[in-house]
Structure formats: structure tokens, C-alpha cells
Image 1 (cartoon, one colour):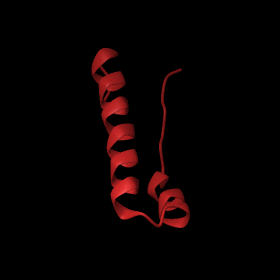
Image 2 (cartoon, helix red, strand yellow):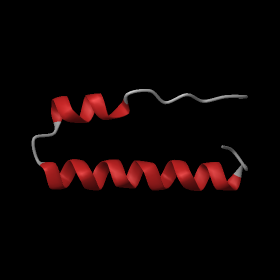
Image 3 (cartoon, one colour):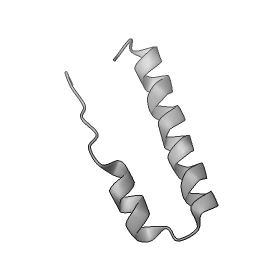
Image 4 (spheres, one colour):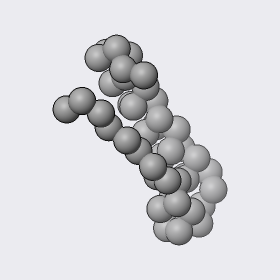
Length: 44
């Protein structure tokens, strides 16, 4: 895999999560995981 593009991921959360606190926690968790992968593989 050479490139991974994530576009408009928050759109789906706005549509399906009415609980703002839960939505924030889930999105934060996903971002942290993506940042760990990026750091591990030296990605931008």
C-alpha cells in the first residue's frame, strides 16, 4: 500500500451518533489509532 486517503469520515458520525460525548470519544480513539500507525510506519 502506497497511500491511504481518508475523506469525510466525520460525515458518517454526524448521521448516526446523536450522543455528542460518545461521538467525540469514538472519533478521538480513531484519530489516536491512525496517528500511531502513521508514526510507526513514518507516514505523513
